[in-house]
Length: 225
Image 1 (cartoon, rainbow, N blue to C red):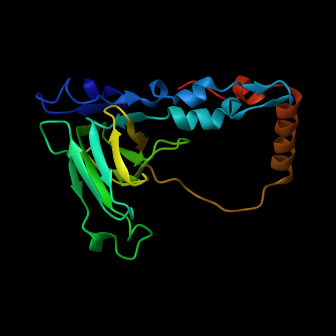
Image 2: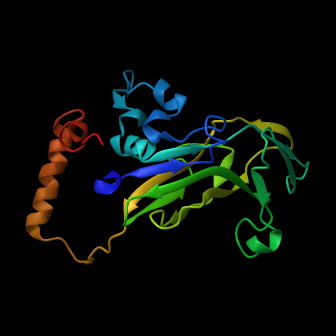
């Protein structure tokens, strides 16, 4: 049975399949700047950002839904208005009216919505976090949101701000737009307390182990997903 194990599925209309950019695992969309970094600065004898496993985990988590087709954006001289043109048979772009953002930090910035044409479906009990691709810089600033994708299977529409100077710009097809991270909906029991002496001792032992060997976390903690 398809749902026998937790899964995620991306669906679009038949006429769009093969024409618009497809979602890809985030691990296949690692930025070129990250790939080009050296893992260590031999001159200084220190590791670089590339050796930070938690940062790599964030970069690699879930999936990337890209910009479906080329979008031409014209930004006004004062940066308060934009015009868009899409190189596709469907509009793909809509907008928030200003009053919808009234009182927010984005009240004076134009907010557009990109219609990705992709529906997302997950196994029962699983939702998806949609957020800006993590640990990246981009002219696209999508808002974060969580959708119960096991029961709500409508085409994904991503609201976002653009950080572009005045002039004409092309946002190319395939540009990473939003990172989709599935997670199981479970309520965790919580407790806030001081650590015990035994727990503090265990923390110290682990801290000393980290310092005792290069790449200790990568070798003994991290497990490839």
